[in-house]
Length: 505
Image 1 (cartoon, one colour):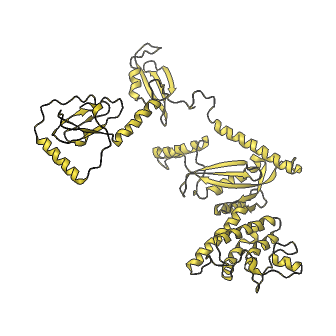
Image 2: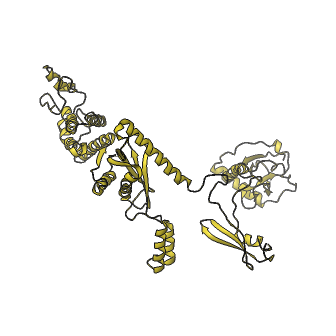
Image 3: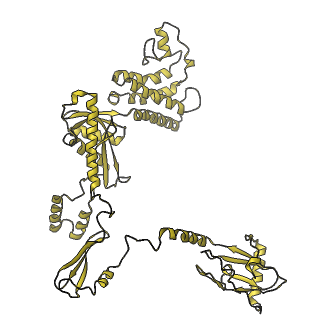
């Protein structure tokens, strides 16, 4: 059958009856005697230039058929003896029968076709690869008949020494005269052969950048206060935070940073490590606690090559790093970190207590809280209170008037933040301002309670402003934000805790 005369279309889904009828016809055709007419050559069917092999299916209509085995020209041979889906079924030549062929590609063939399209783009014969995998025995075969330049004898050996990962030091020596012919590392220490960057330049660059940022920070403080020009050491406010290599209490590495609050530039940094790879290898090789291991460990520490500089839990790494940075702030940065800005995290609070006990400057270190984090602490406390009361059967967050809804919590947190920001220079006024919001919002016409609200004719409180003007105050029903008595009693302890003098100081 000529390929050009065939009709192509997608295979239809066959029902159960059609499948049973098909199997019956196939069984009958298998037992029947093959037709004497020679089958046509499959060259036309497989002459497609595509790199994929395809499966062709036929829908027989009238007469018995003959199965031919045809091999794909590219990928694999298609068997027809056991797998009827991987065969070409061709009818005997006849003018009275009709044959319909279906062209179907499998998922695997489509995936292989994608690789055939990508591989020429990734690897070509003209590519000059910089790295290849070679067996060690190949080097011995290469130098087997090599003459020693000194003694002119064929007795050259190839030695692999000083292994570091996949890198070896290859030495070609003569076994007779013991002369070193050539010696080279399999991989250079600089990854880019064309690079002029020397090894460890990254560390040098970090040190240079830290020196530059310290000069910029000092210049900013001197410009604000010219009296600091002749001061060898200046006092600044910094923020400190740490991080670990991975989450959980088993991290072997930690890092901490000191950042200036005025410029946002990093002043100093330090790392803590609980792991040293040479120590682990030598402990396994020599045995822990043996005299040989003790001698090696003393020499290892004296060389300064040991990477382990911390013993303790991963959680307390932050405290150890903070101690290192505060202790060397005067000698390294010519600055004293007398005030630490924190985000209210529990770990930072522990770090501050640890620094206060260490007392590196013989003067107390002050701690300041970020306003945004403090206001977030209030909103979190209010949400937790709603959940706790709900578990006890007390509804604070309903939809009724005076309830503690999500919108009300956001407004109360905003009032709290504004009270701290406006009264940042007076702790006593700040405390009164932070307590004003719950008392003001819980006031009613029968029980007005505006003792913490600001006084005078310019007061933001409508009640105190009207009384200062000797006018009748408006009704409390006109307030946009109201709290009922149940909500007020439940949230007041949280407000008093967040208005503590030590926290607001």
